[in-house]
Amino acid sequence: MQPDFSIRLEKRGSASTLFAYFSPFIALGLMLFFGGILFAIMGHNPLHALYVYFLEPLMDTWSLHELAIKASPLILIATGLCLCFRSGNWNIGAEGQLIMGGIAGAALPVFFPTYTSFSILPLMLIFGILGGMAWAFIPAFLKNRFGTNEILTSLMLVYIAGHFLDWIVRGPFRNPQGFNFPGSISFSEWQVLPEMLSSGRMHYGMLFAIIGVLVVWFLLSKTMKGFEIQVIGQAPRAGRFAGFSPKGTTIFVFLVSGAFAGLAGIAEVSGAIQQLRPSISPGYGFIAIIVAFLGRLNPLGIFAAGIVLALSFLGGEAVQISLNVTDKIANVFQGLLLFFVLACDTLIHHKISFGHSWRFYNKGATHGAR
Image (cartoon, rainbow, N blue to C red):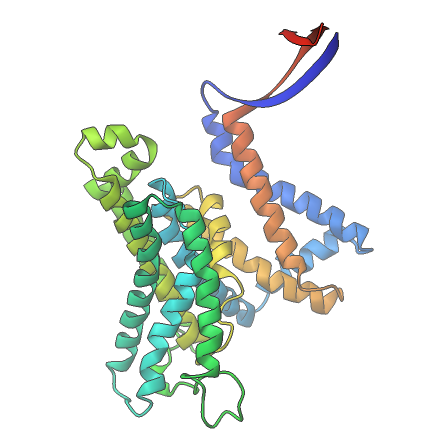
């Protein structure tokens, strides 16, 4: 006779609405607590280190503008992703869609550098949106046509887009007067996304993010299409009985998500960077997944979550300068936040069950009794 212990997750009968609402705040609190422990292990005063990380970047106007620049692509991408996730489609390839949007939008100033007109910037934005949509259409089509897993296809397309960007800025898009360095020509004044205020670098990408949040909020809460997206995500069979098309919904949410990511890509290229480079994103497409879940897949919550995650970038730079630690600490905080958000959500909807059984061995046969 031998004991056999087991640990498993069992779905709760009904999740606590209160804890579900406060889950992001619990995750933030746990991130701060364990982040303080991490700073203490590194030999720094935890309270001072957390102040430098989260509050010091908010103390001057320049930092607030930089915060908006980093928050706008996160908010845009996460707002598009929330449609995918609500419909049960796991688009993990927003980073690739951002890259392809940046490439498509940058093609105009690269191939037509003398085209300086008020129409060039809107055309660049349209091309960026179309580039992101085209890249997002691929995993949606493969899922509908062949039943492929959209997680794998969308993720693999990220690395294809990254290598394509690296090749194109060293080849067809390379600046002939750039002394053989990889990168396109610098954009002219007509091809640059203008600044919103004279006090800093914040450009109109933040306005795009605000408009995107309001549009998706209205779509989800006030339209039949938003209702269809949520029904397909929560009860696909009920959606089919209601006459909704899961395949059509998959195409729709991927295209919208790709459009938002592509817009974020061209806004980053024409606004913050003002040229095409081998790297145009520090991983906005992946970090936006954290933003989407931290914001509870609600566009208004995503806006606030985008500000928090953008602050982690500035905080990483601040502690690197003030405390002489690596700026990779930002990645650690982002990882902690994602872990605790997922852990809180899991424990809200499930409970841990401990069990054991006794196994009796008799003439080579095994019989279990609980």
